[in-house]
Image (cartoon, rainbow, N blue to C red):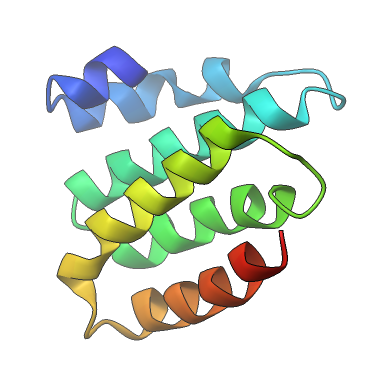
Length: 104
């Protein structure tokens, strides 16, 4: 899914997302990282609502994990989401992210 996203093949990446997210329950970090990639894929498809909805669990995972990579990916996602700053879902996600990332 990650490579397809990087190549801009967003529709194909969505098709592979189920397999990428089919992880054991205790794989919290891996799941969160995949959720962020999928959220970026949805941004590429201009589905801001679904993108924010997909990124929210990863954001909440940052509260229980001490993962530098997850924090970096969340900041990258926030930067990408800034292009949609007038969208209500993007505004809500950004506000929640500021609060959670400050506490994490």
